[in-house]
Length: 76
Image 1 (cartoon, rainbow, N blue to C red):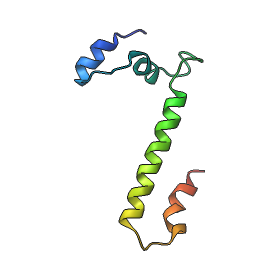
Image 2: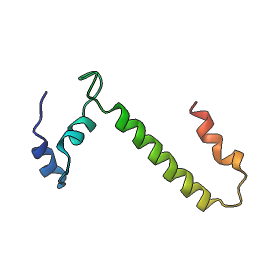
Image 3: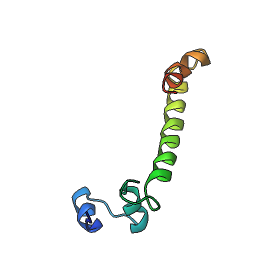
């Protein structure tokens, strides 16, 4: 299914400077095995992880490191 990116931009009230990246970010690998959002999703996960880690260290500066990583280890 093809959707006009401009329509989505209007609904989101946003303007994306790079339409190719915008479309790629919305493309699942089952739809296009080459031009999909896997790398963008991976990068986004890493960025969120860094932001969350920084916030945890700010909220719990005296907490032992091993307790901060407990929930992360459960995901593996």
